[in-house]
Amino acid sequence: MELAEIAFRPGQRLFAPSPPGCPGNVLENSCGFLTVLVGGAEVTSPEVASAEVTFCSLELSWKSTWEVQEGSMDQPSGRSFMQVLCEKYSPENFPYRRGPGMGVHVPATPQGSPMKDRLNLPSVLVLNSCGITCAGDENEIAAFCAHVFELDLSDNKLEDWHEVSKIVSNVPHLEFLNLSSNPLSLSVLERSCAGSFAGVRKLVLNNSKASWETVHTILQELPDLEELFLCLNDYETVSCSPVCCQSLKLLHITDNNLQDWTEIRKLGIMFPSLDTLILANNNLTTIEESEDSLARLFPNLRSINLHKSGLHCWEDIDKLNSFPKLEEVKLLGIPLLQSYTTEERRKLLIARLPSITKLNGSIVADSEREDSERFFIRYYMEFPEEEVPFRYHELVTKYGKLEPLAVVDLRPQSSAKVEVHFQDKVEEMSIRLDQTVAELKKHLKTVVQLSTSNMLLFYLDQEAPFGPEEMKYSSRALHSYGIRDGDKIYVEPRMK
Image (cartoon, rainbow, N blue to C red; front, side, top):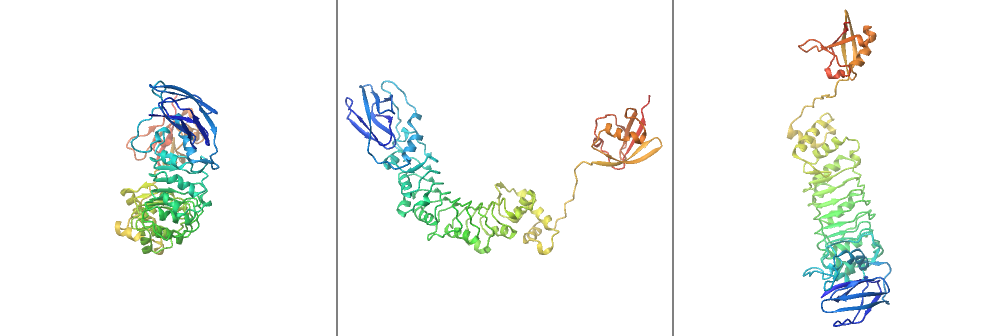
C-alpha cells in the first residue's frame, strides 16, 4: 500500500465515495494535509472546494470527486506548530513519479518517525519567526517528529508553557530546544509541564524574560541538562535554586546586568560542575572573593568569558588564578586594559595567568609565554618596589634579572651632514636623503655657481676602500648610496 496526499485548509473535511475494493473514507486533519491509503494518486486540483483525484493501480482504475467541506473543529488563534511544520516541509519538495502502478513512492523506514518521509522532515527542525502560538494536534506531532532531536522555535509567539509542553512531550528524542524571544514570562511553568523537557540537554531561553522561579523549575525536572542559555533576560540578581544542578557544564548568561560578584558566586553554588561560564556584557566591576573561596565555588571551571565587563584593576585578573582548572580566558574591552597597547595587553595578561593555554580565542604557545614573561620582567623593572606585582618576583626567580633590551632604530636615515668639495672650497651641508641626484644638483646650483647640466657629482664614502663613485643617474635617490654623516660629495664642471 502506498501513500497519496492532498492539501486542504485546517478545519475542513474530505468526503469520498468508496472505490472498487476500497472502504469509504471520511478523513479530517488540522495540519492541512491528508493521507489516503490507496494504490496511488494524482492530485489535479488540491485547493478548490472540490478536488478531482484519479486513483490508479495495476488492479483497478477509478476516478472520483472528493468534496471539501467546512468543518466545525475549534482552532486556536494564531498558527500551530503542526500547521507551520507542514507548510515549511511541504510534500511538494519530495520526489514522486506519475504513471500506472507508480503513484507516490515512500520508502520503508523501520526506524524513526513512521510518517517523516511524507514531509521530508530532517532530524533538526528550524521553525523560527513563524508566528507559532500553539502546538496543534499532538498525535500528529508524535507521528511526524519521533526522529527529531533538535528544535528551534525562537522568535515565535508562544506564551503558554502548556503549549510548549504539548510539543516537547511528543518529541521523545529531543536533546536541543531553542525558545529564545518567545513571551513565556506571561505564564507560570508548572513542574508537571517541565517534566516533558526531561530529555533535553541544551536549552536556550535567551530574551524570553524567564524568571528565576521558572529556571529553578526547569533545573529540577531536567536531570541531564548540560548547557543553559539565559542571555538578554534583564537579570540584575541571581536567585539560588534549592537544588544544585550537577549536570550543567556550560552557562551562557551574557548581556544582563549582573554587576556585583555576590550574584555571580550564586552561580557557582547552583552549578558546581560548571566547565564554561560566559559572562560577557554584564559590567561586573570586581571579583570580591578570597582565593580559597573561589577555588571552592568553581572547582571545575575551565573557561571564563569576561568580555566587556567592568574590571578595572590587576588584582581581579590575578584572582582568576584561583580557579584550579582554568585554561581559557576572554578579556576584551575591559576598562583596565584601555590605556595599554595591543602588544602590552596580551603579553601582560599571559604573564599574569600562568595556567591558561588560550587567551581571547588564540592559543598561547610555549614560545609566546616565555616572550611574554620576559617582557613582563622588563616592563616592571623600573617601577618603584611598592608598585611591582608579586608575579614579577616569581618570574625573576624563574629567569633571573634581565638586562634592558637595546633600542635599535631600523628606520632609514632621513638626512646626513656631508662635506661638499668644489675646486678649493669646502662647505659642510645637511642634505635630505629622500631626494634624487637631480634634486641635489638644483640645491647645489647657488653653492657652486654651475648649471645642473654642467655639473658632475661624485660621492666618497669615508670608510670605503675605493675612490669616489660618480652619481650619474639623475633619478636615483640619495639614500640608496648609503650616505652617512661625514661623507664627502665632490662637484666638478662637465668638460666640453
